[in-house]
Length: 467
Image 1 (cartoon, rainbow, N blue to C red):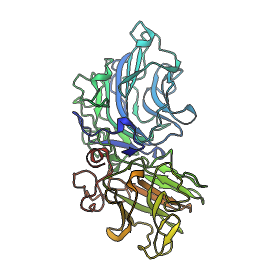
Image 2: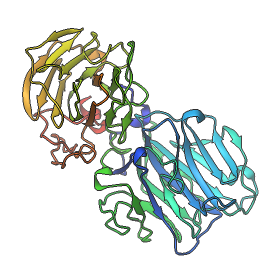
Image 3: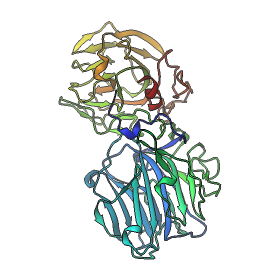
Image 4: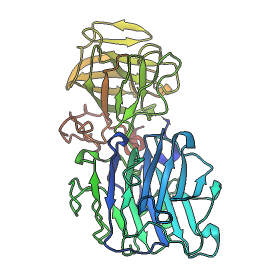
């Protein structure tokens, strides 16, 4: 059993593997852009991409194109977060075409989106079709379809963007395997299919792309607008994108075919006077912004298997806080170990361990800024061991009830505290370190230190075998 993850997250094998994603840190205003040398088909096109959200508080654009602030020449697709209840919106600059009635706010899961546009169609509802995770969306709170033969800003000779609208309202999260098909309104089944378990999985596209079509796989790490860049078009059309505020360290292995744990921006503090810690960098960075008890927790809570992850202390201030494990949805107090539903390794003093609010000051060394804390959780034998800079601090606890489901937990008080977690998806800790490329025994993960023998990265491919 695995907690939090939605059904479409539990992808173990797929006919078509997606190896990379691109992380968009919203506070960096990160995006991709390209200005075509000539217009393609502005009436008919298809956009397909996989998304894993992190930011849920503001409007975030994922595709836009056209002459900024010019009516009928600016088209966009956005996840309308925050007050818009995490719906999907399709719009022209002066008309909101579609707003979904359903919300999409699961930060543990990957969503597949297909938007097929053909304004030449005589029937209104055929001019824009929206598919999410293999299902056509037909229930909209707003539906104002474009007029027949309307032009859009997509495939125009104006700037085209992935992850923003003209540099504003940038996306926060991960995007993987992104297509634009110029001149054809494709079926969703050109890009995905249901497996034998009824889970929607990616499928390799085999059709043509048209004049301004592209395929972005994020396999390269350069920052130039060419075949070696992060925004390289691998369709063969050569429609490469320029990058803004993105780096090689934003390319990750967290994808729709191997979903890694992250921190959960919707959960954390349960049953105490603390609150959720603000998160950044694809929900891998937790940064305390004021003097108050704040917590973060992970998105995967297995009940069996042996799991390893690393946490870099980026800011310790007066106290780096407590790291450890918690059970999701149970009272955790101020930080892991304050209640029976958490086990913690605390930086307080010279280091200590804590469970059920009982502290043992004889365990482990203290830790501070630039230390890397490894967590080795053995749910087959009910034990927990911590490492400081690859040095074992000894077994902290035994007798852990695995049936409750356990995952990452962290908490602290001081405003200066900060951490970046690596569950194996990206080994530089969001650019704070030089990745060392250490994988687990299944060859998954990019860890700074080699995981202990028999311990694995917390990702769905490993969960399918060991979880």
